[in-house]
Image (tube, rainbow over the protein chains, first blue to last red):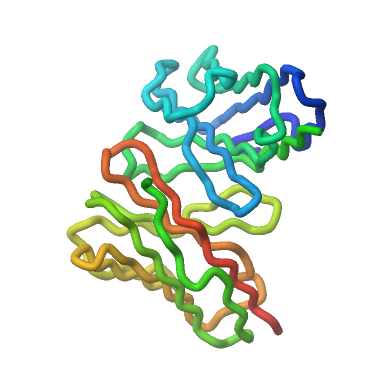
Length: 114
Length: 110
């Protein structure tokens, strides 16, 4: 069974469109994250939710809106996509929000904005 | 910026050799972790070392931490082709979010 899954795996879309990426974890974890990995492989935290509440909200354009309908799901909606949004987006989860907890990553969603 | 540095950026060795990669960070930390990323995949946790520890072992992995120099190293002994991947250090100073280094790409050739 896949622990952290993301859909879609690949997403190619035009500038200006709105798109969503979905993430689900079946590990029973309380905390979920979204990371962005750029073309140079630099990985940066975007958001974190603990028990459906937003606890980390880094400097990210407000075109990005996370939503956690329940502890097992964290979706990322992006409005008015721009070329610079092209990246690989990773979802992750951990047992609690403490940084000492191992984070389990999904396989990533490669977003290409044309 | 919370971004750290990893050195080298890329490393190519032969099977059986040891691989050492270094990580430097800029802030005080409460723990430092190492993750591996195979091509096209998500990151996988390897090992965590707390700020009051100096060295930790896990199988063929050895991690050291020098908080006075704000640096850590990851040693993979007796490397295998399957160790080919990118390796990232990650640290936390807040107790919550992880900050990742730029990564070292390791290529192990048979």
